Image 1 (cartoon, rainbow, N blue to C red):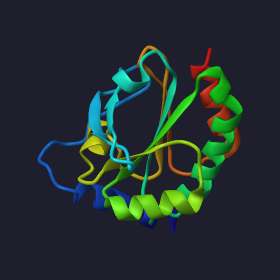
Image 2: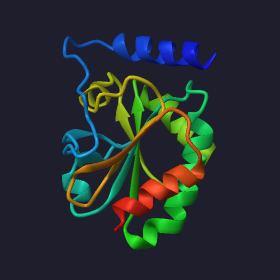
Image 3: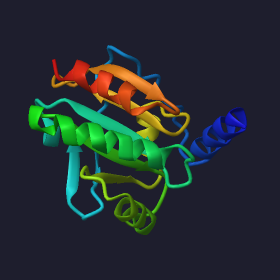
Image 4: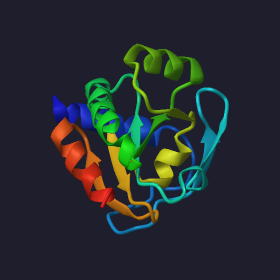
Length: 164
């Protein structure tokens, strides 16, 4: 079942358009810049809006079986670590604003959601399945990458590493 879900995620992201193949973003690479909108309509420019701060970048969709629980787990880590400067942004891959707003309201998490309706940002980050989470240090370098299902402890360990 997990293999089928992973295959479906790859096909859905591949079908999102564009002739550019996904990037191969790895640990030690600089996180790609991007510009988009938050669900509240405000512009979001990465890394400018988060300059000098460690950031967890979470790619998700509401149809993703594991995203809801993990986004709540990320929020628990965020609530514990935000006083130390941790930032979290949840980038929705391929869905419209209404869907994103409804899902985020349902979750009630404390971090912002960003729109990526045509999955262009997801492709720049090399996302081939959901959920995918990047842990970016204050200098903009990717320090950890979690693909697929993970637990709160895994998120916390990776978050603590970028807070050092």
